[in-house]
Amino acid sequence: MNAGVQSGTAAGAERFCVNRIDHTGFTVSSLEDSLAFWVDALGFKHLYTWTFETAPFIEEMVGVPGAALRLAMVEGPGHRIELLEYTSPNDRQLYKPRSCDVGSVHLAFMSTTWMRCWLVSQA
Image 1 (tube, rainbow, N blue to C red):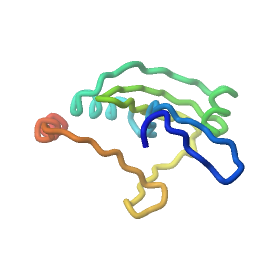
Image 2: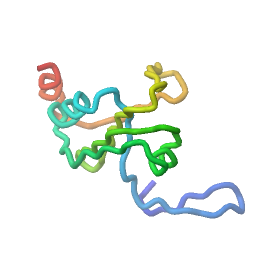
Image 3: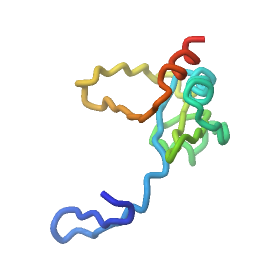
Image 4: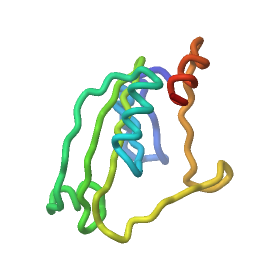
């Protein structure tokens, strides 16, 4: 679908228009390790890192009581990736879905230099 094309919903519902995708977010276990992969291995540009302590604003935005996090935004060709490392609540869990499990996602890239990326990631 082209950017700016209206998408419909159920009959009689309001129509909306998505102009573009702003970013894709991933919750990660280590912001430093993730930045090393996205920036050093894949060549993305590190735009910024922000820290959010537990506050009503953050809890409401992410829908998690007691949430605190560090966020980094990286940018590659035509897309931004948001990396989120939650520092609380203490009962957060590690989720390891298989590709057949509901909630599993993937992000696909086109590259002519995959071997270089792989070698850098192994260093």
